[in-house]
Image (cartoon, rainbow, N blue to C red; front, side, top):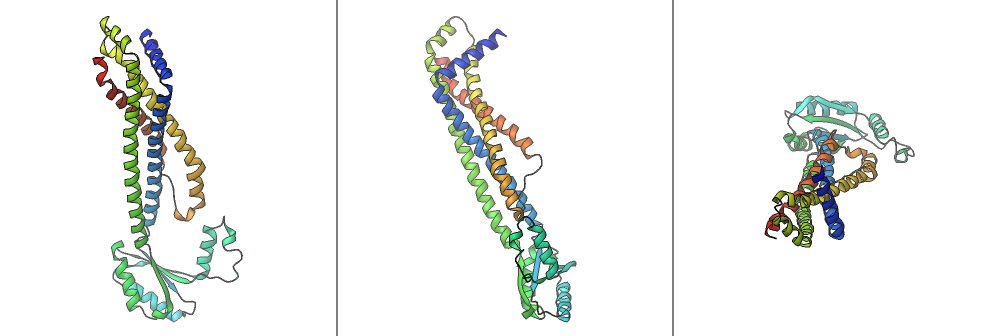
Length: 299
């Protein structure tokens, strides 16, 4: 118990003597781990969005003119069902009225988008799924080139190209975030190391006397180890507060405002993220302390 009190007292005294460097080290740890948390949250949000979108990769929407007759609708549907790459059971006709009801339901919190509409501007359409998402291009090409009453088909939409662009953006975001986190973590380790080295230099005479009277290496080292861990842990706690504040004040509101993008967090994400940030802070502090202690026994 006396040793613990001694180590804690020495750690606190060292922190007070080098308060500016300690605060700087804690701030850098906070920034690096805060960016890590934000990158992980962003990665999780976009990953879930892409997963939701990928469910529609094989979906093709065929929008029809309002002038299309029942006979023409039947001919177009029969053609769609005859395409080998199309899952015939998935073909679904969506009327203008049904499309408008879905639109109102999706944007029920934004009635200004539809409450002043006198006429239904949405078209009739056929929705279908390909047997293999890779065949979307083939199906779209066949509809464009071979469909009967092609003049009644106003547009053909698929999500494959948009999802490819999203995945490219997502990969770049992940790469940039990873590089930034690693760079800032290294800076944090070096700054913690500098703080410990300054503390060691300030106490070099005291350390020399302790070695002369028989103090063990680890008895001398422990206050500096605890100082580094304290700085890392303090930075990680501050980073958690920053991450949670960003989640509550920005990301949750963004998810609510952009419901059509289907952004979301995975369940259990924060149960894993928070301990990882805490461990990351301790590791950064311990590495910084270890790097500085390399010259400790030479004093």
